[in-house]
Every structure is written in structure tokens, then in C-alpha cells.
Amino acid sequence: MVELGDEKVIYAFSADAEPAMTVPSGTTVRVRTKDCFGNQVQSADDELDEIDWDRINPATGPIFVEGAQPGGALKVTIEAIELDAQTASCTGKDEGVCGDRLDAWSTKICAIEDDHLVWDDGLSIPLAPMIGVIGVAPAGAPVNCGTPGSHGGNMDNTAIGAGATLYFPVAVPGALFGLGDMHAVMGDGEVSVSGAEVAGWATVTLTAMPDLAVPNPLIETDTHFGIIVSGDSLDAAADAAVHQMVDVLHEGTGRGADELVMLLSLTADVQVCQMVDPQKTVRFMVPKYVLEGIGFTLPA
Amino acid sequence: MVELGDEKVIYAFSADAEPAMTVPSGTTVRVRTKDCFGNQVQSADDELDEIDWDRINPATGPIFVEGAQPGGALKVTIEAIELDAQTASCTGKDEGVCGDRLDAWSTKICAIEDDHLVWDDGLSIPLAPMIGVIGVAPAGAPVNCGTPGSHGGNMDNTAIGAGATLYFPVAVPGALFGLGDMHAVMGDGEVSVSGAEVAGWATVTLTAMPDLAVPNPLIETDTHFGIIVSGDSLDAAADAAVHQMVDVLHEGTGRGADELVMLLSLTADVQVCQMVDPQKTVRFMVPKYVLEGIGFTLPA
Image 1 (cartoon, rainbow over the protein chains, first blue to last red):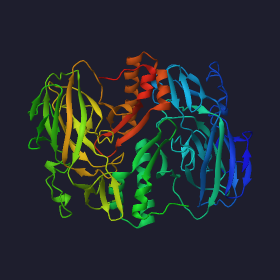
Image 2 (image 1 turned 90 degrees about the horizontal axis):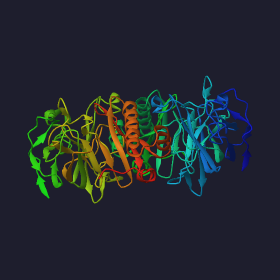
Image 3 (image 1 turned 45 degrees about the vertical axis):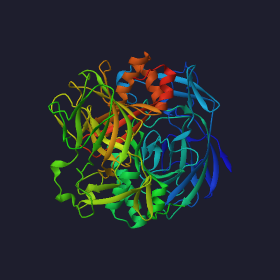
Image 4 (image 1 turned 180 degrees about the horizontal axis):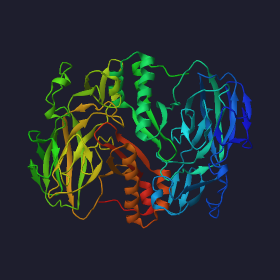
């Protein structure tokens, strides 16, 4: 295992970014990440209208993975997530779902004690660590780290925790992988525009899969296999996610779209990742027992 | 407990419907329900383009609940769901998420054996019984039973299973409650346009709560309290659900919208019910431990 500090960060996933590190395929990297505020909100006195907004949404990297090729995939296994001891949350005017009823920024700092985030004396919240920003360089123009897309990026997907494996479509040699924006806990939707934002360490194993073509990030968890799609609306993202999963399963099993759609309608879940970023993100999650039952082989 | 057979069904929730039964507040009723096809699809030979489409989406009822008054709520506790032994699923041209790629109706009949639905020799699906259509008469024009709204109706919400309690806004004296469209199992989204459609019995306890004003159906499960909102899009439904839950919690605790939104962003989930009906339906679910922590008292 190698380590990468947070001295070199990107604010956009870009084909032109200079690698912070180059690793052979199959390398496990322990990566230090700043929080989504660039670690600028450390106390209740740190006002969001006074921070440097050019330092928002940093992702550590990029990491050049040898063997990753355009047209193939980068497999990313989340081995572990380690959190610092304090989180920051925010909402504000015109931010998130309820920004229409707010006049100013609000922030809240919380301590992490044992396996909980301490909201106040009366309420502690169980941790569910996850990675908000994770992805590879896109084809074409750079995409800022606050925006999700087919390259990954700011997907804010609660399923991206320790034990999950992701498959990203690679658009440039080496993939140029980066990650950041960890959350100690977040609800599906991320309705305020933030999770419990926290710096920390993410340990990931990066493997080039030059022969695996994927249209959008795929995810495998202990129990499910899914596709993650971002779009102009939740409806558009969900529609595309369902269509693409039907394609993936049709190609993998030869079963007809009609049967697959009826089966997925009974067993698979359209789930909201976030509805507050410049593109909205949805995941469509299929239980693994269903895949086994229809003879679909997961990527490996 | 009293019983109500399925001889009297409605195809629209309507203030003008003649009650099938009148009960005192607090009555438990075991209700027979037809499946969403009006029990017209019993074998693989029953083609969907040959059935009587005027008999689609029947809800048994309505039941007049004494004491239910406009401006108040009807509390509905799902005591039990009993399923018949066979389900029907469908998808078709221009139906559901993938109707653009289909040329005709497809149906699939499945047997229920023990606690599973038998898809084929290689795949059995664990049951998760739920009620698709459940609601009260709306104010104003009748709403057909295929369409969800603030009166309930075709919400296709996987959280509406045994043990759940719903609170509907009452618009007419007696509420005029009805239910049908049970599913042996369904995924969030209901992407094909059907769950595992099944006839059966639902046992519900119906209680008038004349002093409880609710803007949309509320739901309480073992672990969560939520609001169910339908709209022109998933985005619109989700936006309204979050705003209305913030209102409910603000009114119940006096805590500021900014704090509530930040807290819900960490703990509450925007979840898709269905994206295939004339209005789309979303639920916003808050864990009960959070409500306890902020001193919010659930309806009782």
C-alpha cells in the first residue's frame, strides 16, 4: 500500500491535469482528503460568505493508473474510510431544496464520538461514512468537482462506502482518478446541499480493466449491483439508469427486455443519490440474488 | 372486526361515491381486494389488449368512517395483508420506463410458494406485500384510481405494508376510504408499470382524527415517519415533500428551518415510490430516533 497526501488537489476532473501519483494497476492507495469546504470551516465563527470559494470541492489527485485505457473501465474498491473527529454541515439562501426560505448561510460543527456524530445534547446520529466526490477524467471539457456525470464526480451516493466497488468509464490514458468530499453521514437526496462534511483518509484499490466498457459508473455492494446516472432532473437520470441497466443485463444474459423490465420492476430500486447539485444523480440497484438467478456474471 | 367483500368497487376516489359500508371510528375491517387488472389476467393466455380496461385499478369501498371530517385526518393502520396464491405482472408498448423499446404487451403469471414468488426454475423472489392504491375521496373532481395525489390513491409505495400507519387528509364527511392494487413484491420505481399484482385481503383499522390537519398522506413505520407527495415529476414531488416535512417538524418543535434542513440532510431519505403513473410519487422518510431527539411528538 502507498499513501497520497492532500497537498495536490484538483477542482475539476480534467484530461489535462498533471498526475499527483502514478501507480501500477492493482495498487492499494491510502488517500488523504480535505472536506468539501477545503477544510476552511473549522469553528462556528467560520462564515461561509468569507471563505475562499475557489477552494471548494477539492479532490485529491489525480492518480494515473497504468494500463487504464480509453474505452475500458477503472475498478475502484473502497477498502476503508477513516474520518477526522469533526464535521461541518451547511445550508443557505438559494442552496439545497429549501434555499427559497432561507436568508443567509447556516453552518453547524459537530464532533464525532465513537460511532456517532453528536448533533446536540439530545441527539446523536450513527455514522455511515461515504465518499461524495469520486471519479476519473472525462472526455472533452473539464468538469468541476461539484458536478457529477458519467465520469463520476460529485455523485453524493450513500452507497459509496467501505466495501463498495465502482467501475468508471475511462476516457483518457491512466484514467486520472481523484476523490474527496467525504461524509460522516448523509441522507439520500442531500437536501440541505451538504452531508456531514469531513476530512479523512480513504483507502482504495485501483485496477485497470481495459476490456470492460461501461456507459456510466457501476457499483457493487455486498447485496446489490447498480448503475449510477446523473442528469438534468431526477426523472431523466432515473429513466436513463433503468434503460442502461436493462441493456447491461440483456447483453449479459440474452433475456428479452420485456422479461427483464418486468423482473426489475419487482426487485430493483430506483434510489435518489442527490437532488441539489448542478446535475441530479440516481442509482438503480438490483439485488445480487436476482443476477445469480438469471445467470448474469458480475464484472470481476 | 368486520369484513367487506369485493362486490362493490370504485374506479375513482370521489366525494359522490355511495358508501359500500359505514363503520364507527376505530373499526378494524378485513377488506377483500381485486388485483389491478380486476382479476382479468389469470393465465398466460389472458392478453392485456383483450381485457376490459374499464375494470382496471379497482379499489374496494368506499368505507364511510363516522367522525371523519373535512380538515381532519383519517388514520389507517395496516394490520395484515393476506395474498392469493398467484400474481400477474405486465409491461408494454409506451408503458413504464422502457415502453419506448417494446412493441406489445407482455404478461407473466407467477405462483407464490411459501414466502417467495416463483419467477422461474432458477429464481424465487422474497415476498414483501404492500398496498398500491389506498386513499380517501378528494376535494373537487373525482380522481381515477390509477392516479395518486394528496388524497392518496395509486401511490405504489413499498413502505405501505403490514405494520405501517397512514394519515390521510379528509376532504369529505366520512372520508370515503378505499383500497386495492396489492403487490406481493415491488421495487421502488415500479419501472415496468406493474408490481407482482395480486388479489387478497387487507386488514385495516380506520380511525377519525378530526383535529389532525395534514397536507399530504403521512406514514409511520417501525423505524421512520414520512410524508408521501405526488407531482408532475420526481423532482417536483421530492421538493414538495421536503418542504412539507420541514413545515411539520418546525410546527411541532419550534426549531428553525435552517437547523431542520441541515439535520434532515444527514438523516432523512428522499425515496422514489413510483415513476410510471400519471403523477410521480416520492416519500421523504425521517428516522424516529431523530424525531425523539428533537422532541417531535408523532400523531397518535
